[in-house]
Image 1: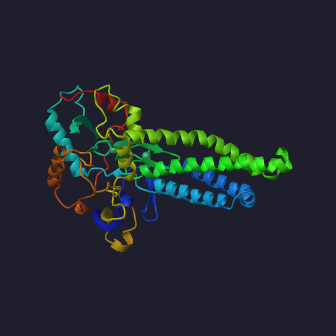
Image 2: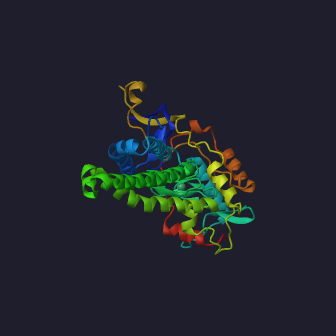
Image 3: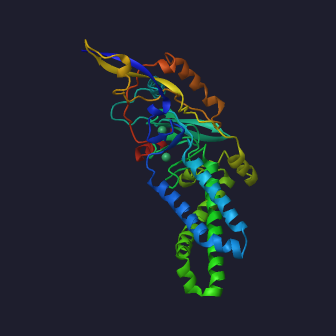
Length: 389
Ligand SMILES: [Zn+2]
Ligand SMILES: [Zn+2]
């Protein structure tokens, strides 16, 4: 019995490594754990449904018909921003091809020389200069790439994400370069919606209490108590979060950089991305260009499957749907530049691309390489603290 290779065309998202889930033929991309995202949806839709059912009819008649109108507008905007953040590619960087990973490993070994057995190899870091500041590009042991500036590996999605901010379970996705502004608009509009509903809940109770008494009002509109409670607790967290992100945007800083203290000045490294001007920083983060997804997840690729050839082997069409082999996606280069990557760091991409033996879609099936270390582990942090020799 011998093995033969059957080639079929599949969408790239079907073969993407990492822990994302896809639906609508790759158009929708989310993290695998979505329980908290459904809770977010339930709380927003549930609270607004109670508001429209119990308060809006009374307020529209006794105060103004514009109250339910603006509530509906705000509600639709919040849901649109939530779905836009949750269902989009946050800026995932494709992993290196096996050939590219091998080449970059050789390049690193050549640069470091032979390390005697028992000695710890030097850290895999490249220094680049951005606006007169030295910024370290760390090597990702899972994705086999030197991460571009500001990128980080999300341990939940198991992908490197460009301009990684944080992984948000409430929206069920990473927040990064491609969906940060929608995330910020979501938190801002949700803050306004919460304040709006909370305020008109109180107005409604006060107006009704004048005629019917406080206890009778609560009996007539039991949803009001629930709404006030949900809004009260949401207010603190969501308004606080919006304030925190407004502060970060004004400094052109990410949550990840803030937590790690990347630009706290302890290494005399100032934030090289800040324009030292709040207005310019806000404009860049909120009104800057939008970036296309580099995953091309709906593109077609060839998938080679080994199948056992027997004398009575079935036809290739009947085999094409059986036993696919896990395969890494062939879409990337070892060092993926972004707009923060200085020019002197980019030539290595061309070098590595030249070493690729054949067009990407024609490469043999990739071997699944187990990660050498989880990228955000203490081991890597320790390595990162060392200096390059
Ligand atoms: Zn990575
Ligand atoms: Zn994530």
